[in-house]
Image (tube, rainbow, N blue to C red; front, side):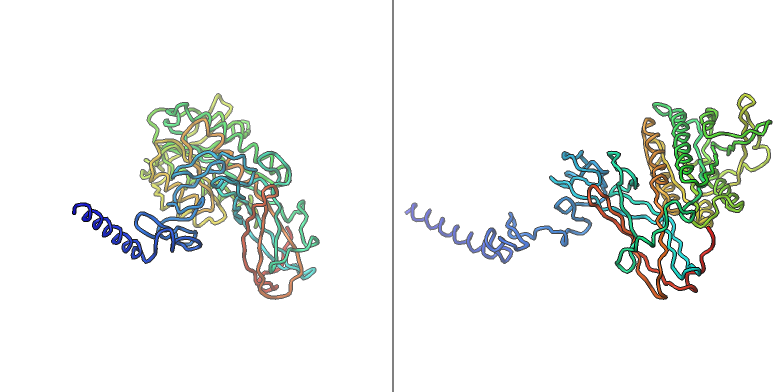
Length: 454
């Protein structure tokens, strides 16, 4: 009798299990969920498999699965279980690892400047663009050589209504029309905290700044274009180099001679930045790098948050001069009370000025980082952060690449009046990675205006 009851119970359990499985989720695991269905069997029945189009809210498709965004791995690393890990494959330049394979980077094209005009001499439309090609990490790519120093890293071309422009339309790379002058300023932190890093960061900062300016000056000389530089360093007052009693000024290498800061210095960062914006306004008014494709750039370096710009020290008693052995001279001065919003308002009034920021060290808080990043973003510049004094050269070189890798491409092509779709396309030769930037132009003498002499 007990044996019959056991079989009965067993039969009931099997029957109930079958019914539940058939009803669970409306599908039978492993049967109705198989094949090309977007469902799979699981502990709770048929579950919808994630695809590039149905990731949960707040997630994106990457590396073959849905992931929460927020981690952007640099080239040479990929995301694994929520962290960046070194690639295990030897991917070619212009490629990165996704899962177990190398895939081409998705390039992006940033247009720095764009100008167009109508040439009354031949009825042709002239278009000139300055641009930077970036890889997936945002790093600027060299158009001439790749990471292995192989030549012809990038090929770029302008398309009109989805058709490539004729070779005859290209402006010669040596043309005066494609040249651009550069006015660059440095705003360097000279507070005592720069000496408190391990190792101290003050001397490496100066050395890196010298290397960058010398490299950019050499690159602009090779292009037969003019390069002008300015220097500001700061603590609670603003320092500027000046000529000595024999009329000799500072060379780029003299930046290494900026005197070492003393204990008790405060950080008047916003005052120094606002002051140097005014320096660029004066340069532009005096026709320094004032052409349509010329550039004005400020590089700001700071290892701490502003703590003194609220204080108005513009009175004469805060001003004076200093010298180094009677050879190098500088002036110093206070400045009116300045808020971050004052700087942003001033910067908005100088649209031709781009600000590149190097934020450094663990003393810089999150709000300070956001403020500095906001200045870079507002002015179409870039923001870089580092915490190790040994990497200061790399940080400054990252800024230099923004200018050394910049390309200028120009065409002059006959187009009848009308609206045209233009596309600037670039391709990494080794990997096949591509990127583009599209824009429209209404072409006519009235809308473009007549071209003038370069």
